[in-house]
Image 1 (cartoon, rainbow, N blue to C red):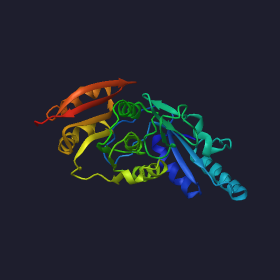
Image 2: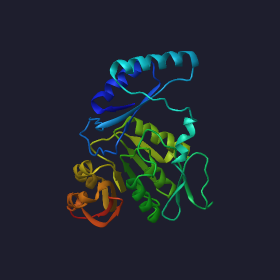
Image 3: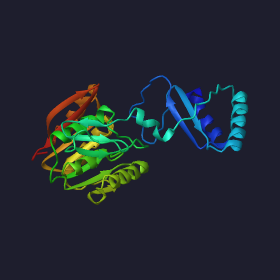
Image 4: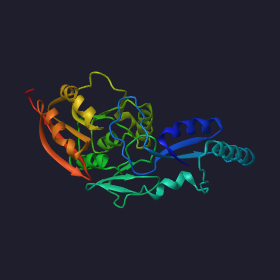
Length: 285
C-alpha cells in the first residue's frame, strides 16, 4: 500500500497486530534521506508499505480478510503481491561484481570468471554494504589497487563487513570492525565466517579510543567523518592512511579541511556524485 509518511508507522503497528510476519517501508518517489540526526529514523514523504504473511492457507485467508476490513476503515488502498520465490528474488539485481582488477563480490553460489581472482562471498542483508553503491565501490576499488598486505586495519562503520573482509582477503594482518548498529555487527560476524576469516576480524561497538592502526577505512557520512577526525588522527600511526567515503561531492572540501591538521590529502575521487578521500598521516599535528 502507498501512504503518506505520517500514516506509515501507524500502519506498520496495526499490521503487526494483525499477525504480519514482516513489514517493509520503501521510498515511493526516489526521495533521498541523508545524514539523519543520531537516533532518528526519518521516513520519505511518500511511503510504500509491504506486508508479508506466513504461508498457512486458512489463517492466511483470515488475516487477509482482516487486513482488507482494516484498510477499508482507514481509507487505505491495498493491492496483493504475486507469490514468488522471495529467497531468490534478490539475485535478479545482485550479480557478481568486479572492483579493480582482481577483487570480486559474489552472491549465492556464483563463481568469479577468473579462478585467480580474490573472491568475497556476500548476500544482501539488513546491514549496508554489498558493493552496489558508489561509496562502497570506491573503497573496494582502492583496496584492490593498494592491497593492505601485513597492515593493521580498522573498518569504521563496517555495515556488512565487506571492506574489512576484503582487506583480510587482500592480505591485511588483522582487522577491527566497528559499528554502532547491532545488526551490522551480527552481519559482519556472519559474513566473516562465510568467507573463512573470522579469526582475522575483531568486531566491536564504537569506543572513545580506537586502537593504533596502519589503515583506517570509514564509509559512513560526511558529518560523522568530520567529527571523528581528531579520534582518527590519534588512531592512525605516522605514515598510515585513512580512506573516507560516504561523502557527497559538494562536501569534499569541508571534509578535507577537517583532516588537514593531521593528514596530507593524497587524492579525491568522484563517482556518481559521491567521493572517496584518501590521506596520509603526517608526523606533525
